[in-house]
Image 1: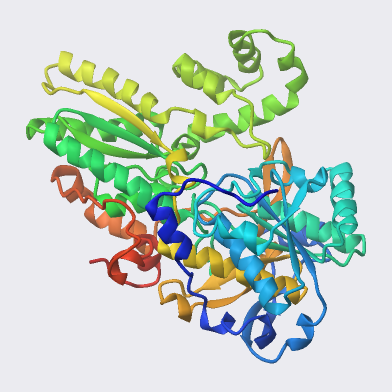
Image 2: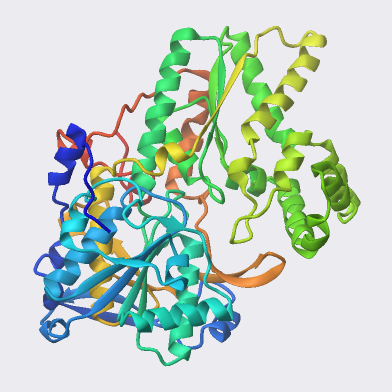
Length: 561
């Protein structure tokens, strides 16, 4: 691969000069830190089953890096591979930059190789050496274009064997997997397999997902969440300003977040919209689709009586999976589609496939499916992603809500209970946030995650996820270490089978971020207290450029201004 040459904007030129701040503990390099081992760990649930599946990597102690002489591990040159897995997230290139710099700081002869196109690059043995010269053009940039990404899962015997053989063939000492919960579950599978095969190659994960659902006490945030939510908040703020000027449209904004509502909640905290739907709340209250719609109708009617025929509603991408009846329907569809894959492939039209599947569902769920608009029903039957998940980004939930609201408002108008106007505009913000230029927080965080992954690899910590903590402090005061991947595991049903996966972190309804929303939502619903965050600030005072997410600040006891 040749060194990247391109026409750069002034921002790109300035960001290329930005030097991320390392935590103090790492500044002298890997030779000056040692791992401090904690107590043995256990998985968050299903301990006996998870232990049986991962006998060689279960129960590892958490690791914290502390000052100490560790020069011996830097004497031997090592070769490390890195792969980007899953969807893009701002800061991926800085993970690779931090990983490269950490390795070179330990020993200038250390080498880093990037597998191309995601995990399939490991199976197909497609890789490139990442040199300092190659890396230079990608530092502090968005995207994954240095080595690209992919969603292949390495799970079959053939794939695992090929991966093992290629890792050995390239004489690699470690593999770093940058990905979300599914990708890092796969990293854990590979780590366990290599242990079973008595192959001395470490596997380390790095927590990546803009959805924000890969976190726990050791992983306070997944990278990219900060940048993406700032991008989405800017767009929502711009819509609010336009809406406040025109005062004639209801905007329904669907935001990325397949299995958790963290993005929607964070953007809501940043912009104060009239309504923020939180999937976890809908699930906890066991709300039906009609109840969700009724709540929105009540808000629209109330604002219309006040002369406000406009507003903005934030909708999490995965809302439909949180509605209990819809969640049950999707689960049944997942099983039916998996069980009858061959038969469905022989059917020519979507209508034929729908009728075939309806006959396989319980009557209650079949009736629910029939009640949905044809477009939504078809979207629910689309092919699942490689992890067996329904592709909720293709389900236009915001349009479903609008159509159902229009029906309810028409009935109220006919009964003389509503005299307002309901003109709508729908939006979906997803890809717009995945490859943005990383915020200063994400630029620092991802660089530290990568550098820390290098230290984990040098210390042969296999089956660990790179952990950088105390994130509301200044970057130099962050703490670093590793958390065992099995510690985050539970058993879930995927493609009709029980499988070990890293448990997703959902919005905690008793947590401070949601409580802040609950405290203010009535005021935001009825009064227009919109906030216009504007674009990400890369230059200026630290309180503007370095600020992290409101979610993280509230979770760690900080007060919002």
